[in-house]
Structure formats: structure tokens, C-alpha cells
Image (cartoon, rainbow, N blue to C red):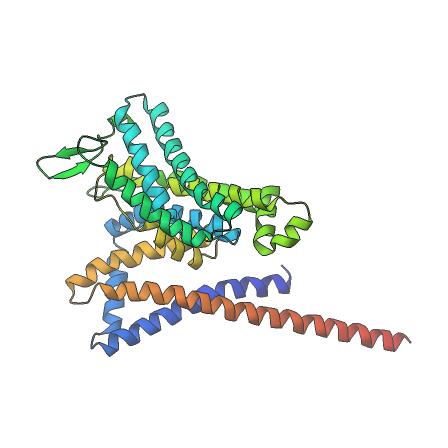
Length: 369
């Protein structure tokens, strides 16, 4: 491997390592300032986080977080901020649950159908923001935030007993009809006494591979990244910018539709008022932390799951649960700063190398003359 490649790899590793070190240091200072023992808190988190049941919890959580990060990253690669992943996945999961509860087909037909409906609904909801941006110049940030609220309102309106919801009189919870057992996704046994690992993790891995291949090994991916870097340059090279914006938002929305599937198909088997919300916003932080790279997003999703698992344990040890939220926010902030510092350092190193090579060539020419 060339020296330059080694140096570039070291710089790529240095940024997240520097960010995590800075985040833990700042969190330790916050804990110390509030009169808490920081190193004891970290010890509790790591000890509890590496237990077998915690590892299963982290993997299951990371599955949804990874898919949310991928959905956001598709837009980020295009320089689009799809803040609407939260509404897209919730709406997709809701209509997928309604359809799944109304049908009773063989599993090999019904499960793909449920997933396809979730992806289509997510893509259709994202297309509204895309069309507004292309034909009316509306910022996707504003439109997707508003669409998140509209998605919540629409679900609240439809998820009512007598419409598309069913009231459980014992728990007083309104939910869609339960999915038939044939629609339950497979699980992976984790060991005696442990909850199983959600089988949808396999789909998440395949989605990550597809993301890497589509964006890194195809003409579409090249055009998408080109438009993200410079719309005018991409347009001059023959890329239809408007079509790329719509396509990338549709793709982002389709991936967002997958976010609710692990919970729906592997855990809850119905959509209720307590269906997990906010995962789309977590996906934004994870995409930033993973630098829009599927491997980085996977590691960030695991880290997020680990921190959330540790938060639950810290409460029992007299620590405030919010400290983990502080840590998560500091990590994202430190990552942004660290990557910018490393980028500038790498650019400076490249300039120095180019200058040294030019000076060496000038000396050779002088010697030859």
C-alpha cells in the first residue's frame, strides 16, 4: 500500500476516534461539574452494555437505527436534507400494518407485500417534498418537517376505533388488527434465557450492501453524488438535475419505509399509539456520525444502541438518564468538528506534498540544464 493511502486511512480513523475521545472527556467534565463520578458511570455503562442480553437489545435497536441512517444518507449524498424520515416510516408502517392485518396470505407472499407497501407509502410521502422543491422551490427541510406533523395527524385520525383501529378494552389501547402469524418475520435464537435477535437484521445488511453498490458502483450513484457536489456542473455534463432530486427523494423515502418493519414484523405485529416514534431524527445523527458510509452508519447505530442501553442502567445507579442524551449530542458535535479539522489537515498535507514534488522537479530541470 502506498504511503499516501496509509496516511489517508489513518486520517479516516483519526476523526471518529478523536471525536469519541473528546465526547467522553466533555461528558466526564459535565458529570464532575454536577458532583457525579464520571469514571464510575462509564464503567457501569461498559459492564452492562457487554452483557449477553444487552448485546441482543443493542443489535435489535441498531437494526432500526441503521435503516434510518441509510434513509437520511441517501438524501445527504445528494445534498438534500430529508428531515421527514420520521413521518415517512411511521406512515409506511401504519398502512403496512393495516394491509397485513386485513389479509391472511402465505408468509412468502404477505411479508414481501407488507414491506413493499411500507416502502411505497414512504416514497410517496417523500415525493411531495421532492415535487415542491423541484417545481415550486420549497426547501425540503421546511416541507419535510411539515409533512412529519401531517403524517402524525393523519395516523391519529385513522387510528380510531371504528375506522382503521381496534380498541382493546383491557388495555384501552387502540391499534390496527394484529398481523396473522404467517406475517411474523423469522428470528435468530441468541441463547437460553435471551430474547431472539430480529431476523430483519438480514434485510438491513442487504440494504446496506445495496446502498454501497448503488451509490458507489453505478452511473446513477455517480450522477447523484455529482449533483450533490455541484448542480450547475452536473447539469452542464448532461445530468437531469430535477429528475435526480425526485429520484433520490423517492429512494430515501422508500428506505425510510423499511425503518418501522423490524418492530412491526419482529416485535409488535401491529401498529398502535405507542409505536416507536423519533427514530427518523435519530437517523440524522447516525448518518452524520457515520459520514454517510454504510459501514460508518452501522458502527454509529451500534454505538447509539449501546448508549441507550447504558442509560437505562445508569438510572438505577443514581445517575440522571439525560446524561446519555448529553453524550449523544456532544458526540455528534465533536464528530462534525473533528472531521472538519482532519479534512483541513489532510488538505494541507496534500498541498505540502504537491509543493515538495514540484520543487523536486524544478531542481531536476535546473540540474539537467
